[in-house]
Amino acid sequence: MALVPYDDTALWGMQKLHKSSSTYTFANRTIEIKQNWNQLGVAAVVWDAAVVLCTFLEVESIDLEGRLVIELGAGTGLVGIVAALLGAHVTITDRKAALALLESNVQTNLPAALQPRATVKELTWGQDLAGFSPGGYDFILGADIVYLEETFPDLLHTLDHLCSDQTVILLSCRLRYERDQNFLNMLRGLFSVQEMFYDASNDVHIFKAQRKVQKEDL
Image 1: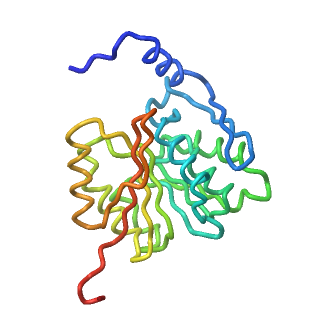
Image 2: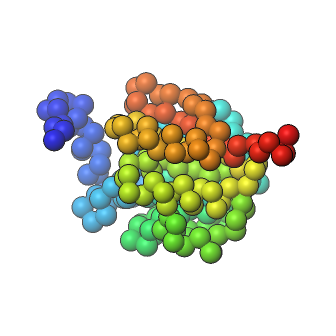
């Protein structure tokens, strides 16, 4: 059993999770994200991987203007909200239990003129794919969604369904356990994968994945 070290850093990390809201600045806007750990647990707090991915999108000037983007396992919706503020048309997804909080955060943080850019939609990986266009997205975003080993096959199936040959997948995550590395190996079976960024202060990696070019396409 892993024990959480009893130190100020660990305590501060837990305190952040139990706050009712967190505030960030992206795309020249203040974003206030509601959290609800007690009711929804991990789906209702902002994890470091989400903040790192948002920073990457903005600082690296990833061109999202007019692009079709889908966020998987959105939780509080911070990444999808930032993508919309950066010009994308975003489908922000999670399981049913998370949707009310997710919708509230989107409505609170996107000005009325940008509301049409963001759609909140239920998606359970591997199960609800008929409602999503195959290969219909320019970018797929995921922050801290690689942690439950039993979900890996469904996550891979979902990525495969949503991707075209041009789709760019950006996954932001910590590599906590051997199983996380196992997921990357599974991902490499379908996609070309490269590490784009590592935030040492938060121990967060950002990986880019795209479909492998088939020999017949060369």
